[in-house]
Image (cartoon, rainbow over all chains, first blue to last red; front, side):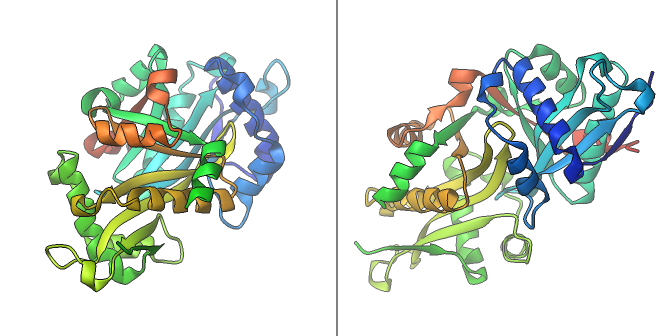
Amino acid sequence: MANFILRKAEPKDVSDILRLIKELAKYEEMEDQVILTEKELLEDGFGEHPFYHCVVAEVPKEQQSSEGHTVVGFAMYYFTYDPWIGKLLYLEDFYVMKEYRGYGMGSEILKKLSHTAVKTRCSSMHFIVAEWNKPSIEFYKRRGASDLSSEEGWRLFKIDKQYLVKMSSEE
Amino acid sequence: MNYTVRDSTPGDCKDIMRLIVDLAEYEKMPNEVKLSHKELEADGFSSNPFFKCLVAEVPEEFKSKEGHTIVGYGFYFFTYCTWKGRVVYLEDLYVMPEFRGKGIGKALMSRIAQIGRAQGCVRMQFTVLDWNKPSLDFYSSQGAVNLTATEGWQLLRFEGEALEKLAQNAN
């Protein structure tokens, strides 16, 4: 079983995309953190100013999953900017359902994205990986990725809504 | 001392570039800056901007030793979190040493937080070098959480040859 196509996501895919987002979050042991809704995904990805782009992997009906799904993998990305080198492609989420792994889908998705990056004149593709996620880290390193947290000491930070509100009102 | 925080204009790109190089020097990586102010202008001020930038400006009578009135900047863009939605990403935040201690950094950051909230962003995200204690302390005081430390996220990238290699044979 190796039949699959990669295509740009369409508005009708948002329910599948959310399903896969939740599966990936479950794998990352943070399933209860997903509060995004299909409505927001639709508005944010397919409105006038998309906040993200998405590629999905689809299998023919005869190869649908045990629960009847044909969209079995996805990658979500957007463009960011490095003031030192210019445009970057940022890979936000990248996931293939367990029963469809080992057929080269992940590799094909990554190739497609890197092709997009090169085509749009991005200097680099960036993404984050949890340090305990050895299979993924190995997958990326085998393909030439460098770990900037180890090599250069970059640490990822966040400031949540309540502090943003506080900061906005203190100005 | 008086200062204003405002949206940058194409005419500010030379100053922004100057400050980008200053910040890169502080981060001990000045040779990594390959971008020109012309590219910055094209990428930030077209109909599809890849970033936004605020600048902090002082009146003529308070200009820097070298005669500059643009003394700080906050460089940001919008990204996406598949769990929660829209995010404002703070790419660069910098104030010239002689203008520090006057609340300019905080003012730049607060305005970006405000803009983020107005766009429906649920959080602000950014990276900091692990040795940069003054910045780590500043961000901590504003409510920032180190996700690399608390959740183990590592920042990775594919660039140059590795990116090209990955892109070959894409379907």
